[in-house]
Image (cartoon, rainbow, N blue to C red; front, side, top):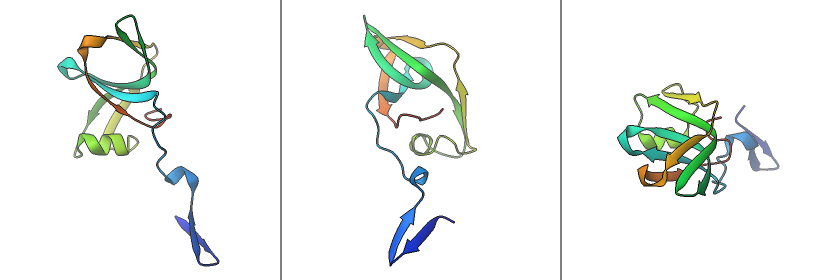
Length: 103
């Protein structure tokens, strides 16, 4: 069941509603094609990602669909056991995502 109707008003399960980006977690695209996501901190010319995941590959969907739904079968994400430490100049761009994105 996706929705329930009570007194003419439709309700949906809270987890099915996309959450707004918190401002701390982001998908970060790095030069040479590396893509990671994590909680972002900038320190001493470095971009540090904690609770990091590696966006390993995706098939049959575009990057926008990876951002919108990272749990779909077409997207392969691998957890990282250590924080990712990136030189700030290697970051091409970042996309803010909800707090639990990719976990």
